[in-house]
Length: 202
Length: 202
DNA sequence: CTTGTCGCCTACCGATCAGTAGGTAGTTAC
DNA sequence: GTAACTACCTACTGATCGGTAGGCGACAAG
Image (cartoon, rainbow over all chains, first blue to last red):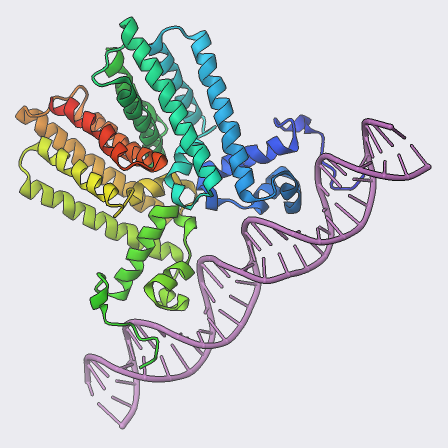
C-alpha cells in the first residue's frame, strides 16, 4: 500500500473521504464563497492529493452541487425532526432560530451555505444555482406552512398572508446572519431575530 | 499619443478613468464577489491594459477599499439628500426602500455592495472588511435616528428600541435582496419589504 | 489466478491570477 | 528647454487555477 494511504478515519468525524471533502468545502465556502476556495485548499486539509478530489467530483461544479444537495437533505431532515419533536408552531420557529443562534455562537456554521451562495448567484454554475433556488423554496414553504398552522391554532398572529410572513421571516434571518458577520458579533443574530418571533407569538 | 489613448469620455458616464475602473469593479463584484473578478475583466470592459489599472490602484485591496469608500460616501450623500427633501420619517424609509426597489427592478444594482461583501468578510483584506463594517454601522445609525424621530413625532410605532428596530429593518432589507436574487424575481424585494414598512407606519 | 474496479497517486497541461519593470508620449512648472 | 509628473503602454514573472493522463496497490468476484 502506498505511503499516501488514507489514515483511519477514527480521528475525523467524516465516515468517507467524499464526506470529508464536502465537510471541508462547506467550511471554506461559508468563509469565502464559490470562488474563495480551490481544490488545493481542500487537498491540504483532507490530507489527499488534488487529483484525488477529481476522482470523487470530476469538476468543481459537481462538488458544490453535491454539497448543496447534501445540505438541503440535512436541512429537510432537520425540519422534519422539528415537526416530530416540537408540537407548537411558535416553538418550532423558536427552535429553528435557536439552532442557528447556536451555530453562529459556536462558529460551527457562521452563516447559511445557501444564503451565501445566493449572494453570488450570477456567477454560479447553473446546476448549483438551481439547487440554491430550491433550498430557498423549500425553506420558505416550510415556514409558510408552520405560520399558517400556528395561525389556525391561534398561537401565532399573522399580519400578512402565510407565504409573505414566511418570506419576510426567512429574509430577516439571512440578513441577521450577514449583520452578525459584518459586526463580528454573534449576539447580533439573536438581537435581530428575537423581536421577529415576539411579534408573531406575542 | 499612443494608439491606446483613452477615447473621449463622452460616450461613458464616468468622468475619469479611475471612476470607470471603480464603476466596472462594482458591477463585477455585485455579480460575483471579491474573488469573482480580475484585473483582466476590468481591463477588457474599460478599454485599458491590465497594468494600467495597477497605476491607479496598486493592489486589488486598494481598488476595493477605494470602491467601498466611494460607495459609502455616495450612500451618505443619498441619505442626507433624503433628509433634506423628505420631511416625514416614514416617508424617508419608504423612499429608501423605493430607491432599492428601483435599482433591483432595473438591474442597475441588484444588491447592496456591502451586503454582498459582508457575506465573504472572513476572506476580505482587513482594510476592506473595516470599510464594510463601517457602512453597516452608518446605515444602522441613520435608520435608528429616523425610527426614533418618527416615534417621537408619532408617525411611527416602534415595538422595540430604535436601534433594535433599525437592525431588524436593515437585516430584512439585505435578506430581501438575497431572496430577490435567489428567486430571480425582482418583485420579491417589494413583497418582503412592504409589510416591513406597514408594520411601522400602520 | 485472472480480471475489474476502486481509491489514490505522480506528473503534467494550458489558462489565468495579481503584480512588476521599464519605456513612451503628453502636460505642466520653472 | 528641461525637469518632473501623469497616464498609459509592452512584456514579463512566479504562483495558482481547474482539470487530465496514466499508473499502482488493495480488494472482490468469477
